[in-house]
Length: 126
Image (tube, rainbow, N blue to C red):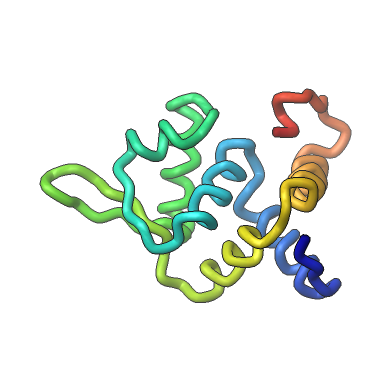
């Protein structure tokens, strides 16, 4: 279990609040946290997640638009990789050090902050 100081926890929470406001975006944040130096085509990313194709495509497009993910053309097809921005990589490196329980707490807090008073379902919390 990784122990983070209060400021680091606050910064990581703000990062996840900003960029992980949907289940698909949270899954992609974890995906990129574990694969910081790799490139993937859309199909590989879809297969690695548990969200629908439309959710992942929307989340991936949003991450490209926000500068978290870079897209290049390789043999006529788009391939995606994590941005080289050191701040983003640092936040995702911290996220990758958290155990399952810590991630769950962070993501539950993020989900509630982005949807105050909204319905909570077991599937949404995943």
